[in-house]
Length: 117
Image 1: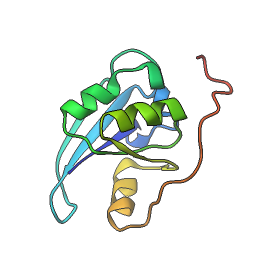
Image 2: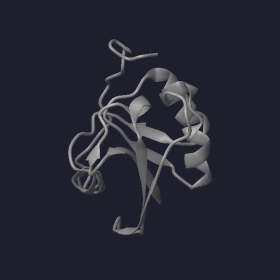
Image 3: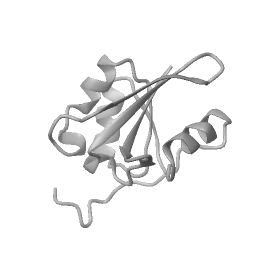
Image 4: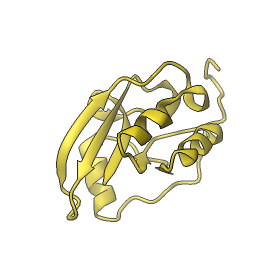
């Protein structure tokens, strides 16, 4: 299984559309990390970005995010990627919490206030 996380250093980036990097984790059947790759997304913000195409090409099926707009969620769904919102903190801690079943999608959406798009 491959899981993507928008990252700012070692933390979950608070806003998907502004993420400078994404980290893709490959997990084995026991949900242990067996591979990690960080990449720079293509230009464009959120729903205007082609990052979903990139992630689909890498085999990503799940993305753990802080905040994201509905347009971007729709784009991810078009590429077979499920989005879990409301994730904050250290990337590896968040991934571990998800693996233990401690994280569920939070019904929050970016309303684009203060965003430059």
